[in-house]
Image 1: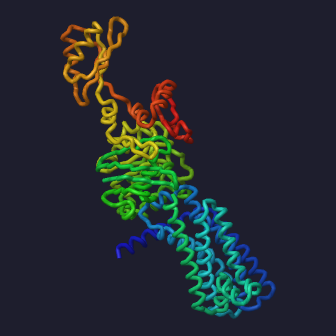
Image 2 (image 1 turned 45 degrees about the vertical axis):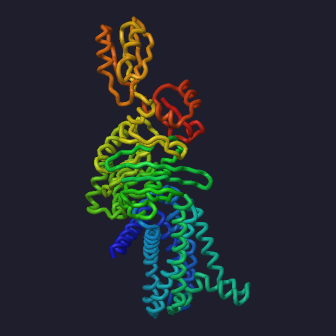
Image 3 (image 1 turned 45 degrees about the horizontal axis):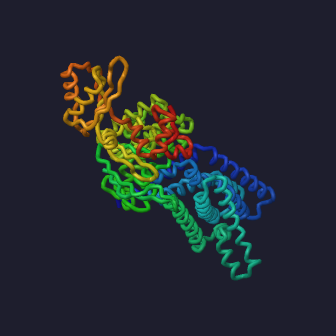
Length: 245
Length: 341
């Protein structure tokens, strides 16, 4: 029990430090501003063209694509910066495990991502005020976005663990996520069987059910397992610095 | 408190440390001394649990650095070379973060004490990125002090500080040494004699000497030496002083105005100053000066880390105080360090 408490304190300390760094640096604000600006403009265009249905389904696929591009910018510094500035050496000699470091950083980034989504709730209120939207699909859409974001963040962290340069980390992250995005279209080229497998691995395919108001356990398990898997690999890569040093 | 046994670390085919062994007890300030690339930082990184050794073992406060790494890390304060810090945080926020990660009791008090001890309390609300190198170094020291750890491991703690800060930091380290064990690495030779109670000289990954600075001098010379300045007959002085019990060897050389300078070698730990003085005064010669002479730490360092040809070459070229340059290691620096006056 003591160990668990101690671990929780260490994770909280790490998450708190990362949150501080995000809120003190302009990067999080710039990323949020760019995301909200483009997303808001697309929402405006959809509204202007006569909203086809009173929920977020027409908007969120674009939002998800936008997140594939902006979230790696948020995660690129998480581990690459520790390596390039040498702070990783000190961090690894504090009484905190590698798992606690990675989980703390992940939770802080997830919190910043959730904060990024808060202003988009304005869309929900607009839809409720001017249409007859139901709460259910709106709620599941946000649940899907959070699970989707967690996966994207964990993959972004993995790419940050590979690089010393933040730019390289961002490029690897965006490249890997775009690859996972296009997997969904592979079915038509590679045949039904292989196509089905690759489609299953596509990060965006699993968002569709959430947008329609359906919480399918298969999709939840997919996002959670992708997130845990990427975090596990990140921990292993982070840990390997000790053995490669 | 710290026991290091046959520590070996290889980076691929390159052996950075080879069979390094030493120990440091509570209250001891141990100086790791050696040229660039000697293995000082590697030793410290193993002791802090940053990476494991290839073979051998190290224990800190009774805990194995590999098996009980977290327990070791709870008991140490570490300042790596160049004090890497989160430059986007204020000093206080950074110290608070370290205090939380280390789960320091009465965190706020401990943060205040550490900042005060390292003399960074007046820049507590400044962003670290805006501090000078000297202040960053001190913040690095302050975070190492957090939680009052039993063991402090400081990798070149005075690098980048101005002369006043160096004196202050040395004084602080001496004060902290009371009931803590401190290991510090340095290029600056006088720092070891000024601060350390024990010195480990490392060269090319191997320990070449472990002892107190004074004992090292004795071991290396194999004797203590007195230098005596006497007014009197050279041959007679040499003959009579050689007969003094405890004296091994006497060498004389003439000086102006009928004065003779005599080097008297004695057995280690054998103080013959009174007997030599009595012999001279008893013979009616004029005793002008009598002083015990020991090798400086610079001489010891050069003898232990340099082969004979290099040493002769160095002495011919640059007599005087030695400071090992911290700049990029050159071939010469890798052997004896760049020499500046």
